[in-house]
Image (cartoon, rainbow, N blue to C red):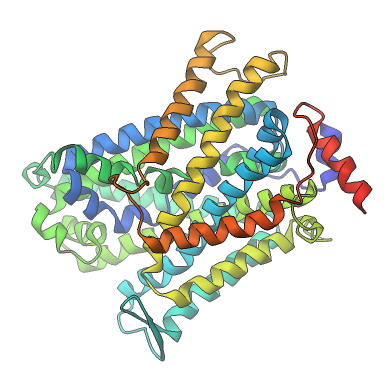
Length: 476
């Protein structure tokens, strides 16, 4: 989108370098590292889990390179929506946008469930007033209300403006980094190398059991493209921040695996309630420090929640602006210039999630992962299509050069994302149960309602968005 269009969109350019990086990094470092690390070590062993994280981070870095070039070339709110629209046309654009929005929404809802789960570790006995039981978990009103109230607060912060959301994000990410430094320090003073045994466990199956968590763990670098119209830095720099955020997240996950495994023998970690918190307490010989780590987990929840709510709302806003969703979602707040209707809609979904109990955590993670991979695959294809069909497009950041290097990155990204998707199919290491497929199906059934209203007969190209908007205006 050119500058004039960006200005007419009404979105305020208020984010700087660190704000954007904090959004991307913070989105990836959610709650998973707190509760899943024990399982990673049990499944794959210390070095097996590290290898899976490095390989997974490498896959996401390759995907991130395609995003980096496209984001620098098209710094527009909505990211994937605009990339795919120019390369493949309106309907593929809707599919990719709906896919990544589904991933974002499931993780926003995940965080609304994760927060009361975490707070209960600090304040045992907070669950009062039983409501019902879901998959063996008794849902209590006080427990659910923790998630609901947090959803209201974070939605309100985002409605107030992206700068306010960015300030909150920056503060919480800094706190999270302090927790990371304490983990490293604790590992040096209280960790034991022999605790890291076994280094490898369950062979290739253990490795894949950790690798399949990659889409969930690394989703978030693509929030930077979603907010590109609100970032007040050069387009080339925006693209670089995408890749840098993936590198930092990979380093974080590797650090968490190594420090946690050094704290306690594998058998004790396997029996821990929240392994990373118990390990942190063990490193410092203090139960209080375990609760400090949980505070870091809460920080991770808030950073991921805040970033992905922002990203999801910008995608919904972009879809509505292009006539692919009801115009109500494209309405900007008269004072704060934020897509407040989109924010309230997604915030409302997250308010419902805690009432389904803690089992919803796993279902949301699993249901969102295939949608995330669909979006990444389409962006990778888009990268290749635009390289071939539109070589003269202005690319402030050209990854891999103008020749075979760029195409190699694109094809590698296509193959890796396609391979990741197959891991969720029946018979594969990460085959999903029926509950995640049900959530996945409901989301795509809702998408089908809007898909058939997407303008057809429009050719892909630089003016695809203008063609779509012309059709939308003609409908009014």
